[in-house]
Amino acid sequence: MKSPGIAPVAASEGGREPMPVAGGVLATWQSFLRMGWVQALVLAALYSCLAIFSLRIADVSDEDVWWHLRSAEWILQHHAVPYTDSFSRFGAGKPWAAYSWLFELTVAQMFRRLGMAGLMIFKSGMVLCIVAALYRMIRRLQADFRIAVLLTLAATFSMSWLYRPRPWLFTILFSTLEIDALMQARRTGRMRELAWLPVLFALWANLHIQFIDGLVVLGIALAEAVLARCSSGIQTRLSFGRLSVISIVCVGATLVNPYGWKIYQIAFDLATQRGVLNTIDEMLAPPFRGLYDWCALLLVLAAAGVLARARRFSFFETVLLAFAVVVSFRSRRDVFVLAIAASAILASGLAGNEKNRLRVKAWAAPLVVGAAGLALFLGFHVRHLDSARLRAQLAEVMPVRAVEAAQEKGWRGPLYNDYDWGGYLIWALRIPVSVDGRAALYGDQELSRSFATWSGQPKWSSDADLQKAGLVIGPVTAPLTQLLRMDPRFELVYEDKLAAVFITRRSSSSATK
Image (cartoon, rainbow, N blue to C red; front, side, top):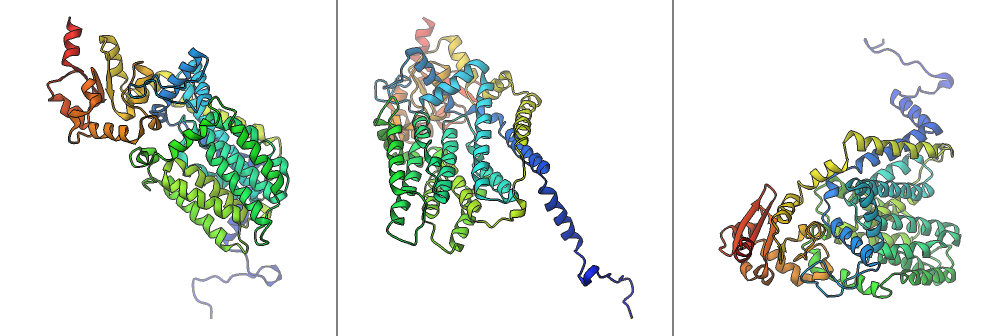
């Protein structure tokens, strides 16, 4: 006797059970994603969404881009790179190198032609190049289209806070290209994958100081080639002799810069400045307060799981991941190393479905590029990202109106300012600042003194730079600003919701006369 209310299930042809509804929908969806034109649309959506995501207005207020622009202006005026500092009182006449001079000239030209919108265009263009390089690297290691897209999204998102108009965008791009070339050369033995690395390093050394990271990655591959000659447990198709030659040429290529071998001394000074790691926000360890930090952690755990599951020891991948973990968890600014390394390891280690391989033809490339370009164009217009609005946004986070007041009234220095605004004041006020984002120039002791004074710690009034100041510009919320309101040596001459301006009483008397 049949139970009431339950209909009998008919058997399928051949006596097999029918496919469940959910399984049928999943199978249909998988078949749908295997179509070339659907995959082209997915790629167009991927690039378009990431292009729109990169249009964050707040990024134009980045505090360091302004001293980079001022440095580029100096280079164009003098037709040379600086060897001493001329932008601060502390560094006046002291050795200083504009080691990102090529980046500075690039953004300066875009700023000169397009205004503040040029900074947004530069950043968005670099983000799209990074996405393209990441996807290419992952796709060449992973046949499954779905996995390649998901890994690209995860890697891109995990380092999304780094999408600012900074020279490190070039390091992210070049690191991706280098690891891509090394992964392929190790698998195939084709050294032509690495033939262009010297050119890359020659550019890299003139764009950003973190070309050192790229040399470390190259050194890991070279160490693997050495060990492979001594142990059968380590395998690579790279020729030790040829890789050695390429490595030597790459090191030589980094010396093709205005500062020669001294670029390595600069890199050493930056890496050993321990005080900065505990005070500068971008140099701190990941705080795990945003989803991108947790995404990075998930990537590294998944990559470690893939390596642990492998039947043979992968020297390059293991050491690369270890290096990525050390530098990325030491400083959140370097999280891109982890994102690139982990996504490469996952792409090569995950078992995808060959049936889901990429089927997009060459005709789809213009579609993807056009969709991303159209998304950027529409994003700029829909969000009204013209220079006027970007300047208004800048005035919400930088002392734009305070600078205008100082210039109008003729208030001059010596200037005393806080760390975060120093870069902008170098550009806007055109007088030497007391401190700015060039941490290596000032050193730990000078930076600690400035931070202690602005936080109102004991003996703040004995700060020599503050005692010599004729003009003070700082945030209205800073403890030092509240203390100066009651200090008879200083007079509050301007204040808005963001910034306060003080001049010394003697400066006030001189201005009256």
